[in-house]
Image (cartoon, rainbow, N blue to C red; front, top):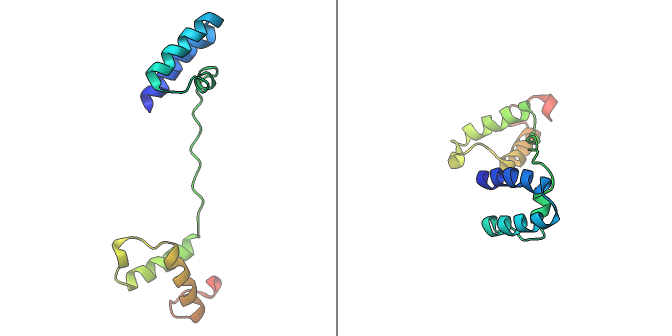
Length: 108
């Protein structure tokens, strides 16, 4: 995909500076090379490429809950060989309510 991005940047500069007749030729050439639909190509070429900043992932649970889940995961002999997920979160809540997992009162 990086090559398409580079091609869009290079051809986009030419496209923005070109006149109406030249733009048609540039579109034909660009669609032949990239495989874009002719109606989609001008949308990518008429404006400069601006990369979006990566959005941080939302946290499902805080550090205290994560430590409690890790404790349960280790107690279950590292079931599945992977860190705990959503299924283990529900189990952790149930164990915490029953007072079995040793989690603090602030988590109940």
